[in-house]
Image (cartoon, rainbow, N blue to C red; front, side, top):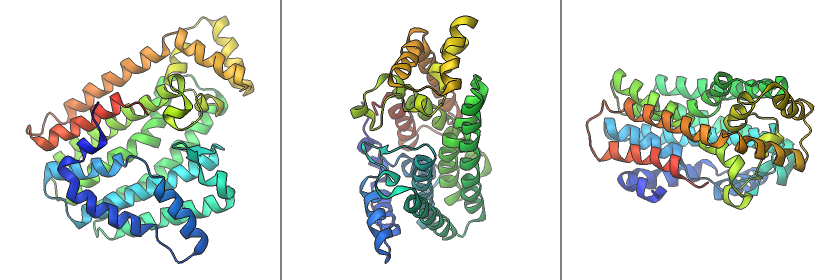
Length: 325
């Protein structure tokens, strides 16, 4: 399987500079903030978003200080959104560790998330590029819009693949699309290149989220770092369950919809919904759709000449499809 370290090979110097500056972005003279920020930084994820930002920049030109600030800003915005998501969803575990709200409770978690969001915008401003700044500031709005849409869908028990794709386009895919397009903008790429990379990032993000949604049905908590069936407990109808419901007769469908409408998420009912999704071919359908989007993503960058950077962009996509957590 392709590793993150392999993918970083052509951008090691850029990542070295990124790591130093990203760590500095978490430093504060405020004692509480300093403690919480250090905890967050020590539990950072794979940092796929800065990887995509640097690769998108490098396929169009030479990454520079603006590229590094763009990557830092986007990773900070992503971090802030996760903190806020955990508060909204009452999630107490993130990447196999306790979430910020689980340790310091909601009041401090909200304030820390707000601080990191503000830091993100401050660093975005250092790019001195209005297009990058516009993209990042609009992204914050779209992430909130996507979260509210997801809450609305859960409340109304919406069984509609188009609505599902709309949510993940706003909540996940748009962040990746801003990474790839802003990376290209940071090196002065032309409009056509920027648009191709924006589309690649968006479709990549859809693949990424579908893979995450599949994990909720087939992995163990130790493998993915959060409770299995967590999406169901939060009332989220993701692609495997959505397909199962659409593939069922009215009587059978109503039985499972009633659990969702009542929000009767006992352990027994969560396991029942997982078995139902599997039995109806929901996992296979989600994997099929993910692979269809993967092919669409590949086509968007056929336009670029074959070279090492293009190869590594495609390796990043393959890593997302193959990953185990």
